[in-house]
Image 1: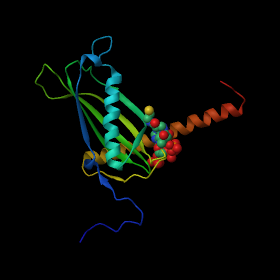
Image 2 (image 1 turned 90 degrees about the vertical axis):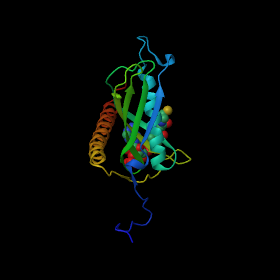
Image 3 (image 1 turned 30 degrees about the vertical axis):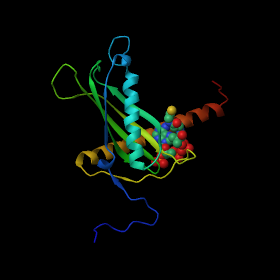
Image 4 (image 1 turned 180 degrees about the vertical axis):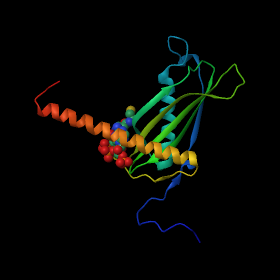
Length: 182
Ligand SMILES: CC(C)(COP(=O)(O)OP(=O)(O)OC[C@H]1O[C@@H](n2cnc3c(N)ncnc32)[C@H](O)[C@@H]1OP(=O)(O)O)[C@@H](O)C(=O)NCCC(=O)NCCS
């Protein structure tokens, strides 16, 4: 006996946010530094993409590629020796895309203080089939109030991303139609 309504034929069952939430941890080394001796932003971005990709693959049950990364924020420098934890979860799902939210925390190697947030980012992954074509993903089911808020905020970002892409595409098409070649 279940209290769930029957699903339309062919619809993929939803998966709760918690089912694919993941944390990737990594100790920063001397190979990860920039000219200032702190950790290079690109090293953190790689970890963010790795963690988000793992979550997208787990949620969608197969390969998923990074379509975009935005709102990458670096709040505090990360230092050599710090233990960095990259927490990722699927915030929102569309037909074939997923927005993954990532929070980057650092435990300082020389301080016994709680981990400090040092960055965050939002990435859109598209689930793809063996030919690299988008495939349908299970809807994410936000369960906690925090997950529900993140879902709603992701929808706002999705609307803005689509509107921005459309506006730029229209501008470029207009310039071409006007005979402007840049
Ligand atoms: C991402 C990719 C699969 C999209 O393919 P496409 O033929 O444009 O397919 P669609 O237009 O149907 O887009 C698929 C989904 O991704 C979303 N999407 C595509 N590009 C996007 C972008 N730049 N930002 C946000 N979402 C995007 C679409 O909105 C759509 O979402 P929905 O199905 O939930 O509505 C394709 O562009 C690709 O393979 N890119 C390369 C990805 C890659 O190699 N990443 C690693 C870089 S080394």
